[in-house]
Image 1: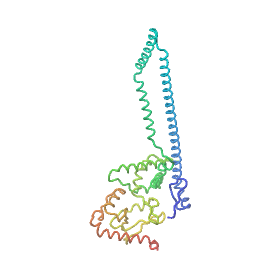
Image 2 (image 1 turned 60 degrees about the vertical axis):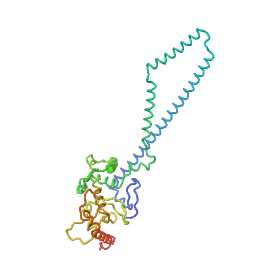
Image 3 (image 1 turned 135 degrees about the horizontal axis):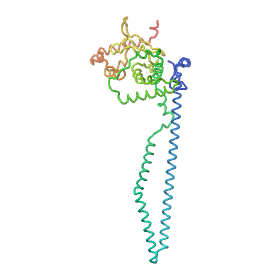
Length: 358
């Protein structure tokens, strides 16, 4: 596979050439439009939320500044009244019995007014404190909502992974019964144990993103089809292949129904899966008699029995009971050596492509 170029519009699918992109356009069109639409919608909503948050922050700052100025003005007014009262008291010291009686009457009137006010609203000051506390709590709640700081941080909300892209294509095929017949032949493994919190969260994330993309299409699928998305994710996890480049590094994810029906073998698989571009080939690792079953390995054969069984259990939901996995002694001795020798010979034969083309 040559150097891959990314689609400029959706920025998530790569093609080996312009000719490849043009030939794939009938299939890629719906996904490309959905991703571009979801990306634009996500960025627009983020900008609106950012502007709204900035507006609320400015209003809060203005309100706090207004309260602070009002408090300073009230304190200044109280200070001036106190000063004038003290000055007046110094100037108007009662000198006669009638002046003293008038001063006492005014003082009693002021005290009575304060008492009556407290009787009508004894918790006024407390209510003001509660309101201020509620406003502070609301401000704290708003501050806890953290928006992404840049558009780059929004990519997980709209940019699909390879699994989501393949899932999208499968859902599109489900809308055409004639094209979706082969999907029903692929197994959907049942987990041997309850899914962990991380696995459940990943499943929810993939489902949510796929459904969002499907809703952006011109003809969204029915509710019954969307309900099959979680099972389709499990089906892809067990049946999809990592497409390898010439350096054996994964460059894509593909679904090959016929190759997905190959069973697993740890001890001595008689075939190995190789790629030439987008094509998948099952290369024989030894002489195979007519009518014999083709088997391949789902995991790394050089791994230990415990590692292989764990990977098969987590990814493919079955317990391997072959002799190489059930007998630890055999795994350490002759069977392991023979398996590595067979693997080396098979890989060397697969690299010699011309030998099989003759």
